[in-house]
Image 1 (cartoon, rainbow, N blue to C red):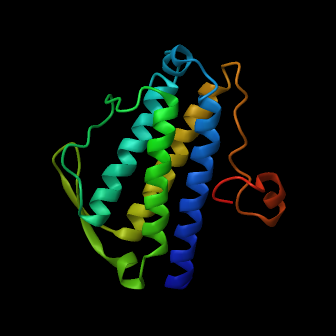
Image 2 (cartoon, one colour):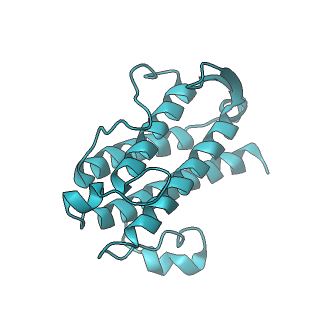
Length: 178
């Protein structure tokens, strides 16, 4: 795969992520505040905490990749956006910045090595393209958990895998990030 193809892949992944977040958080907006925060079985004990965690970690990886804004980003149990509508707006803002970041990547950017300081205090040196790959896998992992928890509510979980194929285009026509 050429570097241009890899950049285009990450740009497509960023759009897919934004589309998936939009669909999932739009469904979550149909829940009451109590349902959104209700304790459920998963890695994080609620849809609210799971999706807040996703956004927090998104910001951490973006800060590491850009070198801007790493200080004061909370982890795990932090709840910066208790309401689904506020979380959706914040996630949309981040998703736009991720799309712009991916669209602007050069070949050198993809191979650039960045330092990541983990919660354990350890520091690892990682290539940007691997950090992006991990960021997208992390998002998909936790969106899947939130999707499964949403299935236990009165709100039907949205389809999140109709993005990349030509076959899928009619199913998402007119939606953001299509």
